[in-house]
Each structure stands twice: as C-alpha cells, then as structure tokens.
Image (cartoon, rainbow, N blue to C red; front, side, top):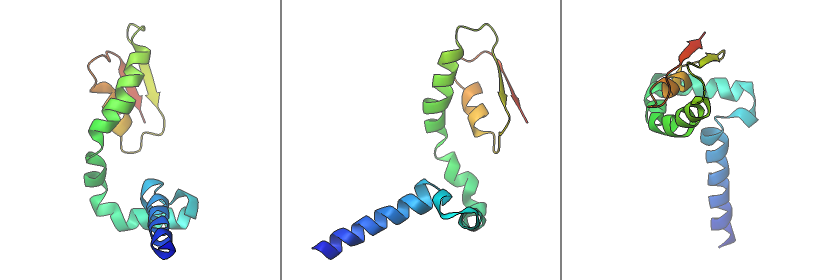
Length: 100
C-alpha cells in the first residue's frame, strides 16, 4: 500500500514539475527541451486555455480599468500575445493595448 501511495505521489510531483510549472524549477536546459519537444503543439495546447485566460486575466484587468475613460495598457513581454488578446476581447475594455 505504501508503494502505491509513493507511486502516486511521484506521478503528481512529476506532473507538477514538467507540466504545471513547465520545468521552471528544473533549470533552463529542461525548460528549453520541453519547449523544443512541444513546439509543434504549443499553440494547440495553449488555445484550449484561452477561455480561462479571458475569464481569469482579461476580465479582472478590464474591471480594474473600468473607471478610466480610454485606458492604455503596455505589455512589454507579450510573447505569444495571449494576455493582450484576452484583455481586448472582454466586453468591458474600451482602451488600447500596446504590445511589443
């Protein structure tokens, strides 16, 4: 019974290290390797989470900016642009996003 519990704990730990944290705690070489292995599927993997990003990032940021007439948001580390896209596609954001 203890072996089963240890196996489950190890599986959960590996999942967290490799998937949830994207290898961050294992160093830059592991992160680079993980991105190399999943590069062809990266957009498909992240696309499934767009509704979550809109709900948990875009909507709260838009709500905080609601009191401003035309807010201007600067995204300096835009990467794939998922966060600015989540913001501009919310119902209550009437501002401008500058991404670079």
